[in-house]
Structure formats: structure tokens, C-alpha cells
Image (cartoon, rainbow, N blue to C red; front, side, top):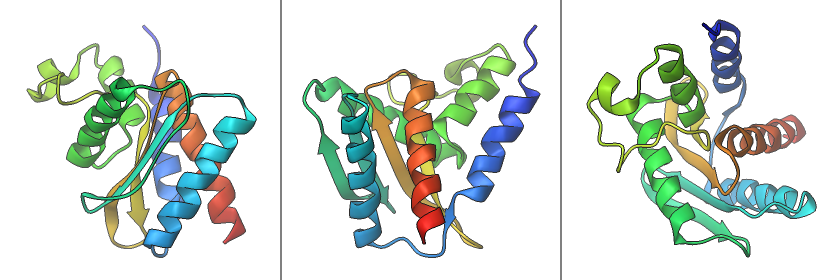
Length: 157
């Protein structure tokens, strides 16, 4: 049996580390654009979606994506919003328990996808207020792209 403890701790650390003082509409445009720019540099085809308190602030699609990516984003967002953790954290947690979202939490897998790619927007001393989501790559890579860009963005602040 695989030991997931280290990875789960790393994912929780990312959530603790990658927090904003504030998150404005302008922040959403800057972060979303940075994610798209990184994907284009790496020749990856993705959709980026940013929502704050359920309100769409940014949505960008590169060639090679479809409406199916939008459906994946919604399902991953539902997981991040429901649990207050990244959808990749929930993926790893459920895998560590050898279960799935339906068996563990009685959530419909047609509406909830515990796969990497939705990261909560955390405001320091407040908590999650929205999501930054990517679809188009394997879940772990969707998650990694968000985390990498957020690290660079927050470091530059």
C-alpha cells in the first residue's frame, strides 16, 4: 500500500503558503493571463477559469480545448468549494482511503470530480473565497500549473 502522508502534507502546505492579502477582479485577470501565458510557452492546451464567491471573473480557452474541459472545471470547482481544499488534495485523500467521492461523501460523480485542477483562492485570515481552475492536462499537471504560477505571482507581490 502506497504511503500518501508526505504528498497530503505537501498539498496542505501549498494551501497554507499560497494565500492572498486581497483578490480583486484585476488580480483574477493577471493570474488567469499568467496561467495562459505559461501554458502557451509550454505548448499545452488548457482552459483557465477563475471565480470569486461564485462570480466568474476570468475564463480563457486555448485552441485544442472543448466544452468538455468546461464541464471538468465545474465538477472540480464543486469539489474545491465543497471541501475547502484543492481538488487534487481531495483526489489524493480519497485514493489514500481507497475510495471515491460517491462512496466517501455521497456526492454524485457527474457533478463532483476529485481530480487535480481546482485550487481554492485563499485570503489570509479569512479562508477560501473562490477557485482558480485549469483543465486540459492530467489532473496532477493541471494542479502543478496553478501552483507554479501562483508561487511566482505571490513572490512578485
